[in-house]
Length: 546
Image 1: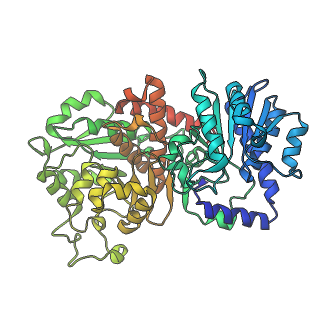
Image 2: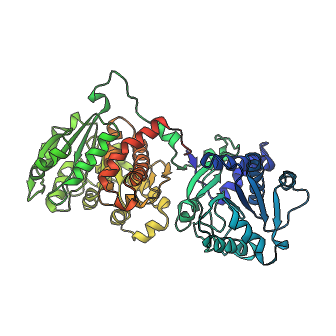
Image 3: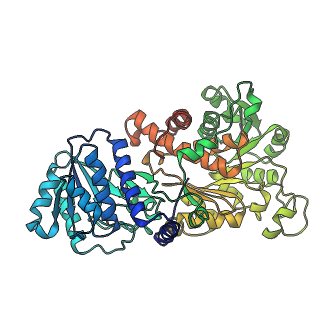
């Protein structure tokens, strides 16, 4: 996985690399070459195309000069526009000039006429004005150049592609705050590690496709290896895929028991079941209230069923006794999708979790969190708790200790606010910190859903998904995610890996579903469930850039 580091952490990492023999000049050369390779991977035929590179005064501008060199070698017609004159000893500038690239400086460009002309003819613009050291407000020559470019782009009938080196200029790489002059990029090639501002709004809107470039810093360098915050990558999650032996049977891939649904929300059970089956669970059993079972069977004929007692169409307290006989043959259980919040379903959860006036099953007195590992709190299989299940367990005193250790909780920000009794705005202000804090506090894996979903483990490991898609802003998509997570859990993956795997595939399935239906506004939760199979195929077959 790619690490997520602050600007100060990145400085420390680069300083340590330099001290170990990877010089700053070598890192610059590696960075520029890697950015050029990422550009050519996406647009392989740049021969004869007009490329404009905006060059700042610092190291980011130096990276841009190296990018220009490699794009010239690829056959592009490169023009470099310098926001400040650079030293005559700048070997990267001299190399680019020797290749007959057109080089213009802002000092010699009266009224920015030359810059507007360059923008007008460009097929590709590379933004190498400001790097990770930038902090708002944007001012001076950099502001003027970016403003001129942005205005000139609005006059283009056909907009050129825009690529940022490390980060879009004008973006605060720690906070995600963004200058209004910043360019909207199609691709951002960030160097060595991801910066948090690239994953925070409003800055994330300007990033486009995000690619992490290797600049030669080894993964085992202690300054980077000790960082627990990561961006999910295709290569890493692929390595976690459960084996699929040819002599397998359905029991090989586990049984997922999904306790879900009510008369008002019947479809949640099916969507979760589809999610579990699409990621490879061997057997999915849906435990639902009796009145909705017949309407659901045609929608998922592959499932087996447990008919639960109900009160007016919602799961009743007596359902816990019915489930008890199913638990021994269950490898993972999902609780919550479509429950509603009726008191009878709350009573069912009390009974299932063995809650009695806030006491753990078989224990006398309150269990302090530090004593968690010393008591047997539940006979339940590994659990995933989602949706209304989260709101209901919040009403149960001592609920974190009643769940099996390392359960997976999948709240959206509103549900997280209910669980934590914190304002949703505070949670959204620092999603990573919120997920990490409460995963440690509760002793369970937290999946904080939303743009750039965060998965946090009680041991401090935290992974951010590289997806932010309005295609997933639709009722029912969370049920699909919960089903995918329990499907991996049933196949034997650990809680954290299941949560990361399910979240990654779910995010990618949202993108694929939007491509298949032609618009992210038209994506339904069922489309996301169907697209999981294509996301799985990509994970197994394709190499990709992530």
